[in-house]
Length: 138
Image (cartoon, rainbow, N blue to C red; front, side, top):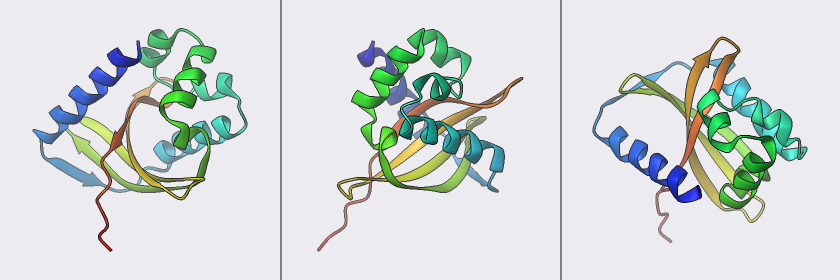
């Protein structure tokens, strides 16, 4: 299952490189969805965090326990961020992507890209990919 999700995210990441991205103004509702999910993770409330996932992600993981296990194992920096900050919102090939900077408890910086979709319940997270952070020379 995890390889399947990784393969999808890798394909999305590579396909996004083929299209120009338009930077958009900040969207408070998108940022609110992501922030609310991160706060639910911090409280170990995986049932609440699961509600911010898109219907496709919910179908893929079937329940909040499976989803929580995937996040703890695959995205520990999101489960336990020390700091997070919203970067630019972009449109790539008709899809909205919100970049987020996350610093984990060890001080490592991660850049994540959240694909967002609008549903009748509001903005939902349709996938997250970990982007390569630029190397900083000493």
